[in-house]
Image 1 (cartoon, rainbow, N blue to C red):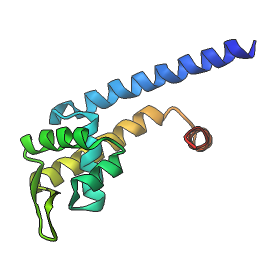
Image 2: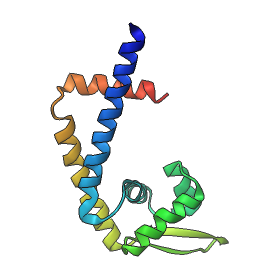
Image 3: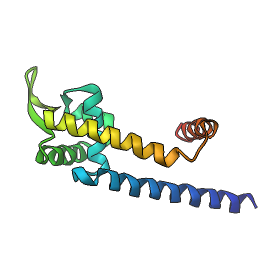
Length: 138
């Protein structure tokens, strides 16, 4: 019996994850960027200029994937690359003014999206859910 409950729980979890991904894509559609791009913008807003390798670490993705994300953001005019003055081999990335504005607008849109999505939960339920998700992420 527990196996059936665990399977149902798993299916429900994945259904919620799919719904969140769909909502996220819809929220990001006006900027024509992916969730990966949005995450990178958020890291750069929080931490400022950094090397590609540091961005990879923050995003927990491979260097090649980071290059693709940075390429996409650069095509949108959201960031720029330039040589690291302390290491000729390294490249730094930083947000443009347009990237900062887009990043802030996306943050606001995602906050509103989260409020709508999780708004059906009481404050107590939100705290329990946060605790449970942190536990599962250990």
